[in-house]
Length: 257
Image (cartoon, rainbow, N blue to C red; front, side):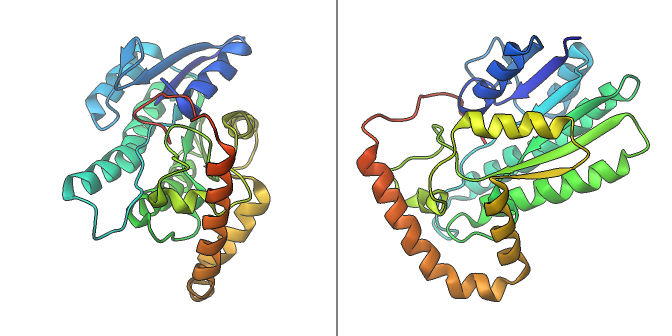
């Protein structure tokens, strides 16, 4: 039986990949974004999220919309920081509340897309990392609150992804390259689809990196001591990616994760 699926940030990048995967398995997909989709949605507007959920009555809702937070804390503008928090965290809260209300009678699954930066506090993207920590904590708490209802809440925490959000030639995106390579959107989507039917609430992609960053989150002193080593490796990886990338990632959503 086909599901009705809402994907926020669905016009490009990871959101577009999610839409394609759901469509391939026969689901009825409703991609939404601030631009580039038939249905527009600003996730920072709780009323708009509520109206969409009431209209579509989704079985699955993917809170994928997000904005980049690359840059030093003291260099970022006030309005940039406000938008990072509004889209990356409050957008997830708005979508989750709207979807959960619409699913209470029939059941459904809400998938919130966070980041490995939501496990370990990450310098150079401090505000972004903070929002992803918030998404992870919120998702776990919401899952617990809704455990006696037919609504399930999940949270996906991927490493850096090869999407328009990551620029191989921008030093501000350094921390996206701490892993061996950027993930392909299809890898992250596959993990997300598996999580939808799993008993787990959280899933890191890849799992081994998830374990590493969780340990660094537990011992911030160790993370601080290793930071120079991590950044040096990231610079090498970014340089390799830049040298080997003769074509840019496809253009897409203004709100990818």
